[in-house]
Amino acid sequence: MKRTIHNESVGANRLSGSAFDRRLIPASLTALICTFLLDYAAVGFEIKLVIFAAIVVSYLAFSFFVNRQQKAENARIIAAQNAADREAEIENRLLALEEANEFFGASLKSADLLRLVASRVRELIPFATCAFFLADETKTKLKIEFAEGKHAAELKNLEFRASSESSGIAGKTFVSGAIQTENKLSAEKELIAPHLLKDFSTAIAVPLQRGGEIFGVFQLFGDTQTKYDAASISIFEAVGERVAPLFAGSMAFERSLSNALTDALTALPNERAFFLVLETQIAEAVRFQLDRPLTILAIDLKNFAELNQQFGHATGDRILAFAGQIIKKQLRQMDFLARSNADEFLVVLPTATEAIAREIINRIERSFVTKPYEIDNGEKVHLGFNFGAASFGQDGEIAAQLLNSALARKQQTKKGEPNRILQFPKEYAN
Image 1 (cartoon, rainbow, N blue to C red):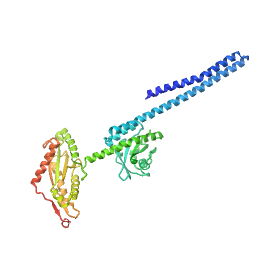
Image 2: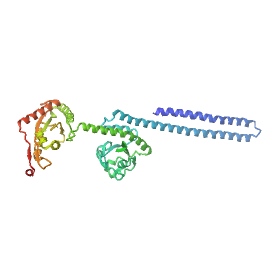
Image 3: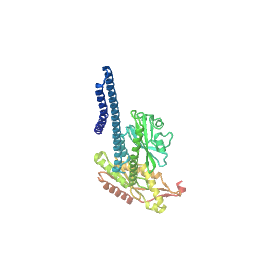
Image 4: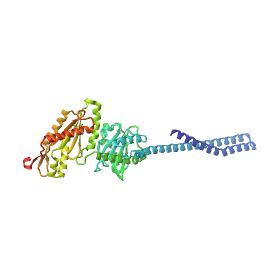
């Protein structure tokens, strides 16, 4: 880029230099003719000396005037060229954002996308931290979904009221649909803890639109060396136009991915998600061998078909959702619960030995003894479950082997226990 500017400047000097020579030729000829005529003029020496001095002074004054014009013209041309080069550089950076949109489309998660956008925007506008605010369904709140830079982890998940008053420049931008800047952060100090703002002194926010509707805000926080002016606003406006499709596509991708891995009935992860998690945990178990035990559980409701027949499929669906919620509450934070199909649930228990798995099973069974499901008519049903467990290494070393072992053991428990649903009329349950 510098080489281009230098070459253009040299060309500009040549153009200005040739113009300087052309304007000086008539002046030089005039000075020579006047000097020649003065030599033959019938006047005294003193008068000739004064006239000659006047010719020299006039010539020098004209040369000085032309030279100043040349320098001013050169400076103007160089400034214009530098501005053009800067605009070309900005356009190239913005084009990189468009290319990212075309290349990645809707295949990047929002966190990865923000890192990509942050690296591109930083080349255009300096910042200490950037944040992506997403509006909730009611359009009344803004939440920092992702942040990159200083204090990013602490800023993430902060929520603000989306309004034009007491909501920071992000809220004002969301409501007004126009870029907002702040060079004292007085509005932000009412919302964000002081220790998070100590490294920031300026901020600029741009609305992100999709189909004419604002769905979020992209905001930069600058340090004490940064000031966002009119030029920054112009650049950031262009950035917002290119970033909005990227974020919209990424959000759509994450929603579709979530839908593909979520059971619609219970809102739990589905069997596909179960296998993804299980494969990851198997890799960890292989890596750490005996230091990383792994157990899985297969669970189903006893006589679920009878429940459906007696109370209807709608009630059966609600029972499944209820069962999923209770089972999940009895698991450890690291455990992973998924719904497979019909009345079957699958659980991944990382670092769990057979003894820990048995303890978790007992905890689940006890929880359903004390928490019956209440039917709409006031009757209560105590749910029973069949369990099958399989441990990595003993029962298999790949996902399919472990699952088959767990399902086989669950079938064995079905054959060895009577299937019964305890139903209590409302008056006795009370």
